[in-house]
Structure formats: structure tokens, C-alpha cells
Length: 385
Image (cartoon, rainbow, N blue to C red; front, side):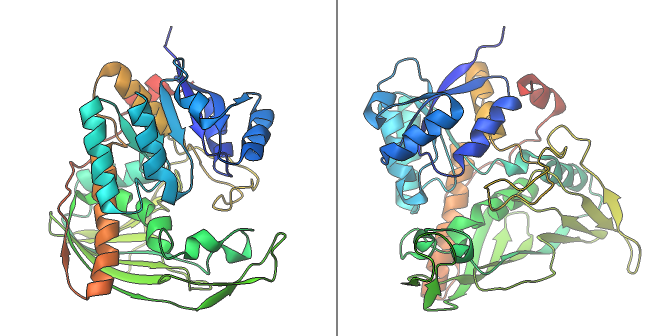
């Protein structure tokens, strides 16, 4: 019988719903207790999911819990993950690893010293869409990738989130920390590690208005740049132009496009698990559609909008696979896919984007990682119910 790891949840916000849903799909973990600095949130979460709400201290000291699932706000990721490690627990956190590079480096050093695993979202690159893209790239279907474009751009969270201020705060705010991890992790998985970054930024509006909830109509100050244009050069020679923005009402560009010397590829949304990969091998030709809806982690499993704002009415969402794969790797004593080195490299790129925009010069990436290995069918099968 497969060993099931007991998991303790810290941070009972909206994203917690998705991780509890992961119990339906993965066979090696069970969230048994939850905690939050807001005890009411913990009690509400515990009641909804039929588990026990406890204090953070009690959770960390529970010897039956092997892994801490850290779903706190980005600014608290480092401190909570550090607490987990110091209490001898493996930890899996939402993205990013930390909101500054120095904290990320400290965290990985501590994990190595303690011989504990640090896992980190996003795990969407393990889904059918990005894995199919990776498979086709590895087969050289579009030849050597020289250039590409990637974009995430929308008006911001203030219209649908009752407490949007953290997304526009001086520390931890902005689209690079919020959505950058999805795009950057996908690109590193597809192309390998990044070498250097050049970036420019702007603040679209100095004030925003809350659109829903008890604070509806209240204005708040924007304290960080809300649009970044970045050029990222990878060690394999590929140059990607990345746009991340909270200032665009709407657009019709593809999430990621890669241009090789033998064709072009459209990569599906890196914030989701499914979607089709499109390939064009000749100017004016029809795009060949490589569907992923029959892949284990590409099948549509969401058929109505949930409370998660980033879920469309029908899509594949298997968030929690990174946690499950990490637990499997702990048992097998091997490196996991969503590992600390990958997360630290992505955090270094995030830091470089911010730093380049401030200084107006190229920034070299120093915290490197290995390109993740393909998520094989046998690996997936071993953790699926």
C-alpha cells in the first residue's frame, strides 16, 4: 500500500480550495490540519473541508505532519517556509519562493543544511500543455528556437478582488511577482536556464478603485510599476520578449510563441494545465493542432467557474501535482520537478527584471538550475488515483 503523507496547511485563502480538490486526483498526501494568522479563516477552511483548525505553533509541532503546504501571501512565503524547515518539515509553497532574492538563497541553504525538500509552485508546467510543447521541442519539430514572445496583460485584480492592495504594494506587488513565475518557469522548462535580462517598466495609473466587496468604490494608491517589458536571453541562445502588465484592457496575442529555424510554435496558457499546441512549418500554412485533452494532466476537469478568478469555465486544473510529485520524490530519494533550484532561478530572473528596470542596464543571472526533466507517463501514473 502506498504511504500517504500527512500535510499541514498554513494560509487558508482562496487558493486553498484548489489544493483540497487535488485530493481527488493524487494518491500520496492528505491535508489533515490547517492554520492561519486569521483564526476565523482557519476555522472556516476546516469546517468546509472537514479537518481540524489549530494554531500555527501547534501545526508546526505536530509530529504526525511531514510536509507544510504554505499558501500564505507572497510577502510571508519566506518566513513561513523557514519556520517549517526549522521545525524539521518539508515545505511546498505557492509562488514565488520569496519576494526578494536574498531570502530565497537563505531558504535553499537552510533546506540543504537540514536535508529537507523545498517545493514551489507553479506546477502548471507539469500539465499536458507545457509538457506536449516540451516533447515537440525536444523532437526539434521547429528546429532550433532563436526567438519568441510571451505576454500576460490584463487590467489588474481590483475589479474582482475585495482586497487588491497587496498586488499594487511597494514590496511584493506588480505583475512580475504575481504572474511572472508561470511564464518564467514554463520558459525555463522549455528552453533551459536564463543568462541575462534587460527590462523597462511603467506605472499605468497612480490610483485604482476597488470594484467589489465591503470596500467597493474606495480608491487606493498604486506603489509599484504595473507594466514591464523584458528581454531575456537564455544560455541556449534563445531571446524572448516578455510583457507582464496590469494595465491592458484586452488583447489578442498568444500567451507564448516560439520561433525556430524550421517553424513556429504557439504554447498554451502557462497558468493552466491543458490547451492545444499549434505548429506552423511554412508561411501561410494552416497551423497543426496537437491536442492535450486526452493526456492525464490535460483532461478537462473544471466545467463551471469556481471562486478561483484564473479558472475559465472549462479547463484542466491539476494544481497540487507538484506537491504530490515532491512527496513521491521524497519517498524515492530523488530530485523533484518543482525543486528549490528551479524556484530560486526563477526568483533570480524576477529580481533581475525589477533591478534592470530600476538601473536601466542588463542584469546577469547568477542562481542557475538544471532544465527540468520530462514528466514521464510512469511518473504520472504512480501518483494518480
